Amino acid sequence: MDTADGRERLRQTFDTVAARYHAARPGYPGALYDTLISLARLAPDQDEILEIGCGTGKATIPLARRGFRITALELGAALAAEARRNLAAFPRVTVVNADAERWQPPAPAMFGLVFAATAWHWIDPAVRYRRARELLRPGGHLAFWEAVHVIPENGDPFFREIQDVYDEIGAGWFVPTGRKGLPPGSDFAKPDTLADRAAEITATGLFTDVTIRRFDWEITYTADSYLRLLDTFSGHIAMAPWQRERLYGEIRRRLGQRPGGRVRRHWGAVLHVARAKPLSDRTSGL
Image (cartoon, rainbow, N blue to C red; front, side, top):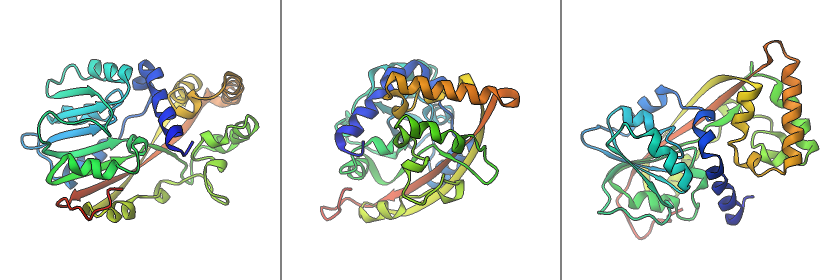
């Protein structure tokens, strides 16, 4: 699924679970937003924000509550409709159902921040940095982060244990932190070992002052709430019914044998913030 066609098919699956996405997906730590605002030197009365791939508004709402004017782009029509409902109380937020690679602002863009929360990897790698730079005012900032599964030293062993079922149904590649989703010899990622894209950002020639910050947090799930979460992941949505039935049944069975029937899932995020350079024809635009 690393091809452009595969990426496009998977990113469109989220629109089929729009109603479930907002309730099931985790939010991000408040400290992440505070750090973002500080690093990007944002002020609600001065800076307008553009969000790429807002989904149902999980990352939009915390910034809207801080008073920012936001234009939020979302490819999926159902997701965009859900985001409008979730953001109805914030008149300074506009949700646009549009493809970020092709969307054109109604006036020359002067955004102080272009950001993506668990959506940057869905944007075409050949154009995403150039596209973001074109939409920023001089000195504006690009920011992105992904919420990914991590397992610290004291993490729940459940996820290593359930990998045999993913392997059995031939779906190991759907789990980016599983054995088949990482290079040979790798294990589950830890919060402090998550890779960053600092070198990639610098190589474009479009940005400077690249800053990296790492965050991690834990959420406890019941079997029902954990399966609702899995139902919002593109790989699980794309599973054949027999694969999902076998996997979900085994998750229920194994969690049912635990005292309390719960599982602890750790999340990690690497916040990238970079300042825009003046545009030049010599930049790569990666």
